[in-house]
Length: 189
Length: 61
Ligand SMILES: [Zn+2]
Image (tube, rainbow over all chains, first blue to last red; front, top):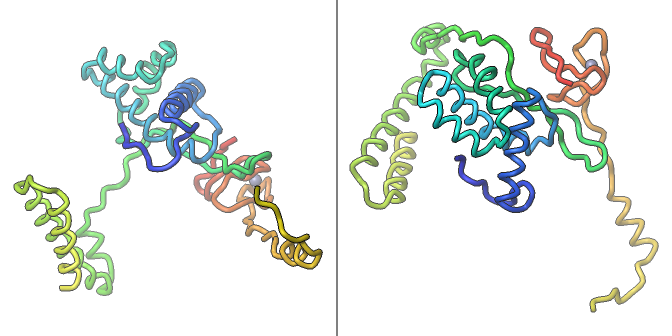
């Protein structure tokens, strides 16, 4: 589950937000494309993609019945769940995430709310050409070469911070403070 | 109950309302050659319902 966002929920209460998101997800899988407000579309996106991920895992044979029951907790329509598991999930077998797409529309007449279309991606997945970072850096001009040591130093600091955080199981806040201090030092150096 | 102490003068009213100004949004021309309408940037065209650059234009509505 995504962490509940700060501030107002969709619909006013957590239960109402859950219902709104469940209904939006059901309609998204039923119709493939729905028009809603931009904020609802943005909130729906991670929920819907996590449901698709469960369906995908079931398609790959990873505990299919449990995955289906998990999805049925959100989508209460068995027909839609069947469509999700048998028709939508297999089309995403190759795609590593990004199953939905949001396109903004103009403001709505009446309350001027910014609208958006959220749709299930139907295009065939084409893997991007893998470009190794070394090759791209070699192609770039010496101006970019100045940036490389800075990037390396930040990577080192993050590694150190990660290494420090793992043994130190006391207060995570203190570890976080240390890591941030180190990052600032690394940037200065 | 709190009530206004004085009548709001016509001058004050008009002075306040003169600050309510509408700003014309900046628009872009639709890349669909068959459409060419003006629409908001980074949004689907309201006339033909298409979105995207010339190479990857798609029907949204
Ligand atoms: Zn157009």
